[in-house]
Length: 193
Image 1 (cartoon, rainbow, N blue to C red):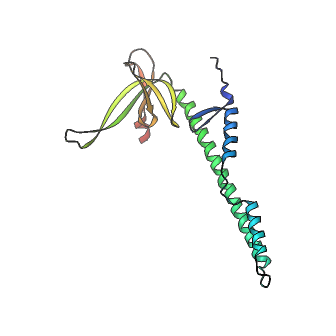
Image 2 (cartoon, rainbow, N blue to C red; image 1 turned 90 degrees about the vertical axis):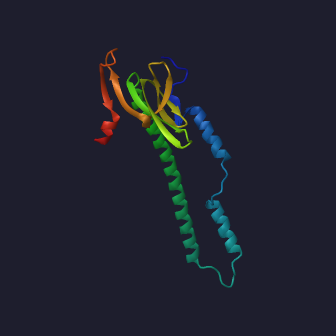
Image 3 (cartoon, one colour; image 1 turned 45 degrees about the horizontal axis):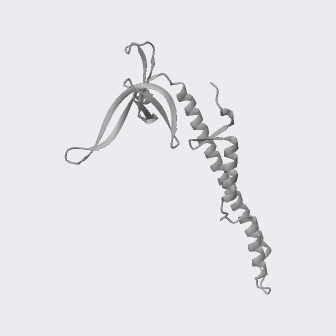
């Protein structure tokens, strides 16, 4: 299966796949466009110099106060750096989770699946009503839609559905062409165990 893109040179972020070059270019653009609202070392030094310029020469601030201010700023800066790195790690873990999930779901392609769809509707008097319908089909692919991983299922009638993983009730192996020859795993039974 030849592809014009090498899958090893791609990055998936929030359900969007980029080439590594396009991702690097996007990150560089975002960094260049980012407005700097936080106080950094330079702002602190300017503030400190201004404070020294306008202090009362007859009652100068003590060295201990300056040292305390510098220590507080240093602590604040370190906490900000840690928070930024944690956000980066969270994004990375989310991308890894999506990749692992897609890998696991890919192994289900060609398997039979049952799922339930719930639709909000109204009864004859206009009162809200939830109606659940059960469906069956064969998993034909995996789709990432708005950052959500879904399985693509084709029913016996040839209709294609993007099924939310949470709606799947069972997955089973299609051993033969006879519908009665299946090995079934009921997800509802395993969830209760």
